[in-house]
Image 1: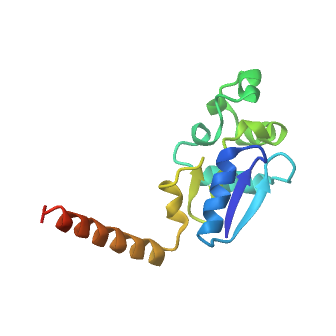
Image 2: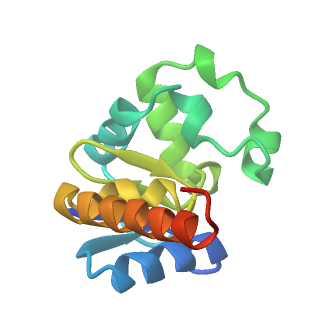
Image 3: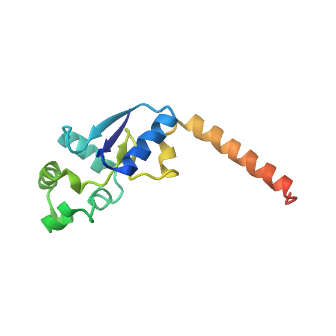
Amino acid sequence: MIKIYTVASCSSCKKAKEWLEQHKLAYEEVNLITDELSDAEMLQILSLTEEGTEEIISRRSKAYAKLNLDFDELSISRLLELIDKNRTLLRRPLIVDDKRLQVGYNEDDIRKFLPRSVREIECYTAEDNIKKDMLLQGII
């Protein structure tokens, strides 16, 4: 099941949810401000990052500037405590399933949440369309 961590006023969050709905992908929404966020959920998100906190912490947020900390030097328990008390530290949306994490909304990258069979069909369709265009243009 896909989980999407959002904030109501976030336009990227709205775009991501619309994309998931258009592609008929079931998801659970977690509001970062109002909903509970367990340490286990945060640890799962962290485990899916490639760059650790660098990937999920918004360095442009007011909360980040106010804290003035080196997040790479924090213990995991201190990091989890800070995130719990300052949810606006997190970039958004955070979209996760059992194997993947996407930070922010990117129309190309979000496709990784489509089932493989759908991605393969779309790939073949795109290849066919390219070949047709090339034929029409006399390239092949």
